[in-house]
Amino acid sequence: MAIRNSAKAIVINHGKILLNRCTSRFGEYYALPGGGQNPGETLQEAVQRELLEETGYRVKPLRLSGIYESVADRTGTEDGCLCHKIYFIFVCRLMDPHPARPTEHDKFQIGLDWVDLQKIRAGNLFPHAIRDNLTALLNTEDAIYIGSEKERI
Image (cartoon, rainbow, N blue to C red; front, side):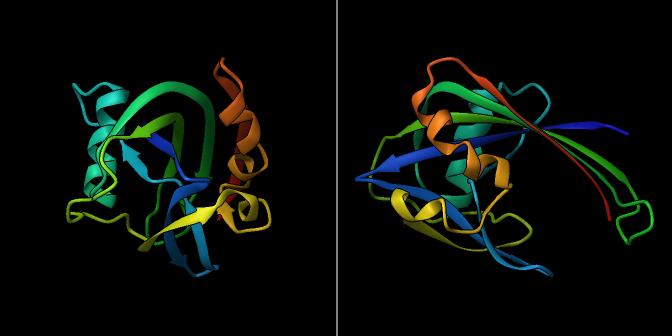
């Protein structure tokens, strides 16, 4: 089983957070934009590349705000794997409010929304550990470990 690093971004602009709108067999939900780190790429380079690909926005990572991990046993499914991801969550600054055209989407991504920060706690932001710790991720100067999830599918 390989461990996959994923660089995610928290981008705030005028009181709204940039989120990917996604759908799966569980219904619609939101996720932070970002994705997998490529070999030879720093986490900061990964978050910049992924944001540009998925959203069209250029960002500057300001600081690592949190770490979260997920282990999912999918050995009995079509994927047939044990998947272990470590999410490195960066607070990023929007460099240009006018996005380019996105070139790639996440597997479950169906759109992109700027969501009011006041409404996100009641919203369906996945994983819930990010939603439940969003205030701390934004307001704590040190990176925090926000937990792990182990699921059997």
